[in-house]
Image 1: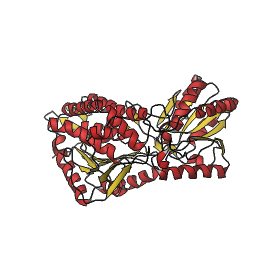
Image 2 (image 1 turned 45 degrees about the horizontal axis):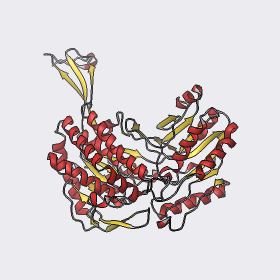
Image 3 (image 1 turned 120 degrees about the vertical axis):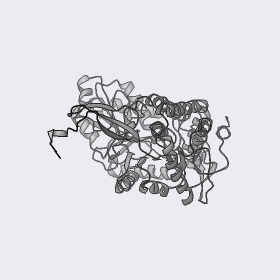
Image 4 (image 1 turned 90 degrees about the horizontal axis):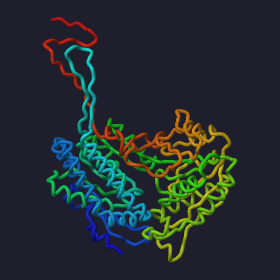
Length: 508
């Protein structure tokens, strides 16, 4: 096997505080990183202490004063080189993501590819941070708006995408002229350390100021400190709805700005006019991929009653073909859950579903034996349910799929929308009217609405995010960059007079 740990310069004991090229010693506690793949200890990490936190924030503020004055295309050149560095280390970094998080190797590689893609996007963006020119109502005046760097941006990322979501935020923030303070999940700290060491090489080669990219590894208390710190104008947080509500309230209390990417309870509507084979593939990958630990994972299937039995039988047959095991083996489709706490949540959800009347047509459970070390491998399962079940309205970060039926398209949309979350959605249909209804103002209420592709995954070119308890934020592509900058409206008077707006006269 490739020595990906050595290639990424991960030590047995690692510091968890970095300003870029430099790593700062800490008196904080040590957290171990265990792989859910086999339960083995990968490495230990020192968490940030109070002095380390203050050092990072001060350094980020100092670097911002310099970094914001770098021309945006020059900042883009740095991001281009970061993308090249990620290309160079795609294999070892993808393997680390797979091993530390537990997703399949293909998905680990895909996540690194997302990092590369967002770098490419950000490079182009560096020459497209456009404002607007507007006509003034006053003669001999010119009005326009421009966008300026905002300041240090705090990024709180989750374990399920330990590098991609950070890059979505960090590459855009940095190309916009912001500095970055990254608080990764304490469940996947080594991925953050590896990324920081790779980009540090780029920074050293280009004399990028220390403090442009910072890492703070620690527990939720670090996230709380960032959220309450008025020196950090923007917090972008990815995680549970519970976490997001706490972060949002803390940031709002100081009138800061937040980008929240929270839970999803995503549904696929399968019409009787669907291509069944496409629908099956999308449903299985959406529900079982990453062991159901994507915010865009398919949680609910809403199937038209005329094809319900046919679709259900095909779905069961497809589930029987899923291979569960070591995610570094590319023959396997499903790896482990992140840890044993996640396993407990999975089992609790199954029991709740059964108590409410759910009928499991594909049973769940924990897998044991030499092929499944570590105690984190579970079986993807399917339950027939009613839309009103409480458990159906709850996001469970595990491979549990809820199956229900509908009669009319309007009913399916109502079922889909009747949950607190609003991230991703999909309809499988070859009928234009059904598709357009789903995409209309009276259709899906989610931030992402797809036709004939699943709910899972996202392309970096589009703004990513959702509505309702998903948080309402947007990151990655399109014009999401505006969330990392401040808007300024400017009026220039190039006349010899001072005409006032609305024709007001003020004579002295």
